[in-house]
Image (cartoon, rainbow, N blue to C red):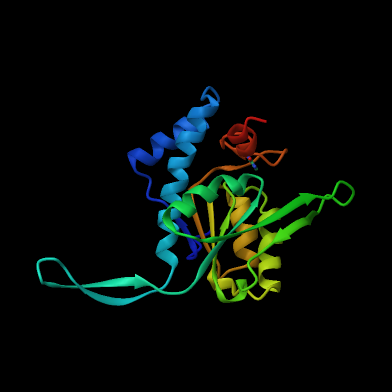
Length: 214
Ligand code: URA
């Protein structure tokens, strides 16, 4: 796969590998799947925060000494691509107090087989915000591409979009980064490929079905 400067992969640590092994295992029961997927999502969200701008800030510690640090600047929101993206909302709420969360539902039109926008609810001032776009699996990239187009139509700047996904694949990355080269794409792992049914291989099956038990 081409090296995209805007694609950021989590460092493959023993912990990350172990968490991925549990959620990939077909034998993992639903409550464990939820628990370990939530832990992984939290790591991803924490990494995503690194792509927000900061400014210098100096504080005085209880020892009376100065500490030269930073603080986040810029307003943010999150947009989840339904339905699996909703599973990432708790983690983002846990780290960003009172964050506004919009929703987008995109489904494949049965006749044209093209992704179609079915439902959208976004913060009114989204054009002035950084946007965390949430979808745990980046497969063909069809839904994410439609979602990003809609965000741009609503005035969001491409370089203010931080797309978070747990498992991606070369096909999806190529599509998204080809169309929107300025976004930040943060993923925990890039898998091998898509199969004929557009499942990621090795992947973990259908994320939404395993998380929601449907
Ligand atoms: N969505 C999923 O849940 N799994 C895949 O493998 C691809 C898309």
